Structures are given as C-alpha cells and as structure tokens.
Image (cartoon, protein in one colour):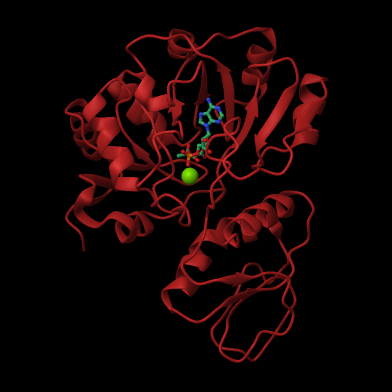
Length: 319
Ligand code: TXA
Ligand code: MG
C-alpha cells in the first residue's frame, strides 16, 4: 500500500490543505472523476502539475470554487450564468465565463486566456477541501495527459505513484465521466464538452437554445484541450465489435453473453449510467493485460450513451 494514499477524514483534509499551501499536489475525488488539485495562484505548483501530467501549457485548467462569492473574484457572472448556476451547482457542469484577471488565478493556470472555466463540485470531500483551503482550487483530471481518466484512488496511484504528495481515497467517482463544459463567453451558448448534464436538460431549464460544438479539429486553438487525443489506453481500441478476435480483450454491454476471455461487461442490465460509472475502470483493467486490441461492443447512442461513444471515439484516435 502506498504511503501517500489515505482514506478520507478530517486529518486527510488538513494534510491536503497544508500541501496545497506549500505548493504541492493532492488528488481528491470529484463526483465526475478524480482531480489533481493545486493552488492556481502559485506558479511553482502549476508548473509541477503541468510537468507531472505532461500537459501542454496551452491547455487551461478548470478552477473549482465553493461559493458565488469566490466565483465572482475570478469571473464575470451575468444573468444567464446566474440562472444556470442556480439550477445546476453544485454539480457536474463547468462554465466558461469572461475572466477577471488577478493574482488569485495566474495566467499560467489558464493559458493566458480572457476566459476561465469554473465549476462548483458536488463531491463533499472536494468541497471540504476548498472550504478549508479558502481559495479557488485548480484541478484537471488525475491522469497522464491523453490517457484514461481516473475514477478510483488506485488509478491515480497507478498513474503517478509517489510523485503526488497525497491521494485521498473516497471510493469511486459517482458518475465516472468528466463534467459537461458550456461556453457562456460569447453570444451563442456552446457545449464544448459533452458530459453528464445534456443539452436537452440545459435548454429546458434555461429556456434558451444551446449549440453543440462541431467535431474537434486537430489543433484548433478555439477549443483548447479538445484538439488532442484523449482518454486513450495504450492498447489500440476498436468500436462496434460484435464478435471479438480470439486474442482481443473484449468490453461488452447489455445482454451479450460470450465465452470469451478476457471479457468485461459495462452493464449486464443495459444500464447506461452503470456503463459510464464502469467505463474508465474497465478500460484501465483491460489495458493492463497488454493485448493487441481492446474490442468494444456497440453502446447505444442515447442519453449518457452519447457521451460514452464520444469519449471512445476520441480514445481511438491514433496520433
Ligand atoms: O469533471 C471535471 O471537469 C474534472 C474534475 C476534476 O473537476 N476536471 C477535468 O479537467 O476534466 P480537465 O483539465 O481534464 O479538462 C478540462 C477541459 C480541458 O479540455 C480544457 O481545455 C478545457 O476544460 N478548458 C479549460 N479552460 C477553458 C477555456 N477557458 N476555454 C475553453 N476550454 C477550456
Ligand atoms: Mg482530462
């Protein structure tokens, strides 16, 4: 058992706060995926985080807050943003807003942009950490840039070992997929990353039309972080496979029953929420087997299944 891995507790929060205060990195569970947290006002902490993840400095971080008051120190909040926040925060929704420039979030943490991605997580442990720290917390997903996100503390340890000072173990992230990102910084409201909260629900609540960003183009500067290969295992993956090859690792869904090894089923009951919850964990498990290929059974493209398919399509990009 790694020494930097401890179960959630008041002691863990205190320790994590001390580490953030001295510019270190801490991993904490969000309701979406595990985050790798640092102080966005500390240049050394930001540098450490980008280096450790091997993340291009052009890819800005999401800043996490615990209150409207904290939000308003770093972003401009207009009427539409306020009403979205009322409906959906705390929860798995990130907003891109015009940024208020000051030392609380350095340029370096947000790629020098005039906009800033912000969210208030519903994860209790994450909120407790922000409360105790008393300042905004930057947190990308806790994985090597381009690799599968982490939904368990053990995934974070597998990705970074002892290079993170502390990983707080709070069990598995409830949703298993990253937050939805919507861009409110220009006239049209744009979904920049699909997630748990979908367009229909957003449109219903705010009674305004929302647009989906077109397919990410390679190196499109208007959508930082959306242009790179993402969520990818080291093993190549193949989608919509009904009959896997003998040597493939196979990831199934629903009623499919096969006498194949290795085989994992994302949800035997065909429950897409369960499939989302299991997705990254099972991909990591199959990747470890170092087979030639991971074949994946078709997953229905409805509801959260659309997000699962989007993640898998990005994961199979070979660059
Ligand atoms: O669920 C989540 O959002 C998790 C948890 C830990 O909160 N975080 C997460 O962060 O997924 P990350 O860094 O893995 O993904 C953040 C995405 C990146 O694609 C980044 O390019 C985009 O947000 N982003 C950040 N700031 C942006 C901005 N100002 N404009 C456009 N995209 C931005
Ligand atoms: Mg990520």
